Image 1: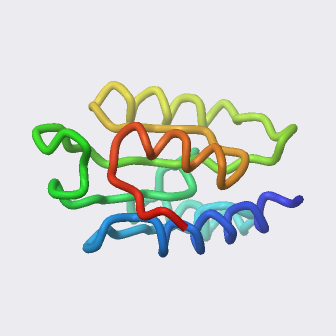
Image 2 (image 1 turned 180 degrees about the vertical axis):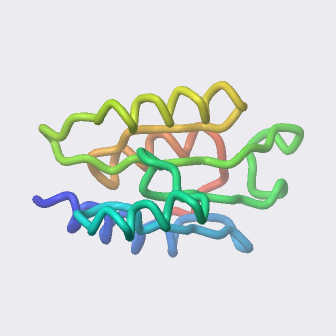
Length: 122
């Protein structure tokens, strides 16, 4: 399965599984673009290596309501590797207290998110 297909399937699952009021966002910074476009995006705040999905869950949806932080998922294929920029970004996000996971399937996403938030069974 291609990364795009895994990404779509995870997004569809998240729409059903996350607690009410949750928000999922994808910042489209992948792909090959002209140097001028990349420079413009960088000036606008696009960070190289930013994870594929950002997830925000209301405090009421967390297993431990006193714990809250953004959750990030980096979607990869079974053999996909993390780039140098992705590793750097993941490390920085982790240092700020964010939860960051590398997922290769809906099952990976489910396993990791189930440790943090109340998921709907589907």
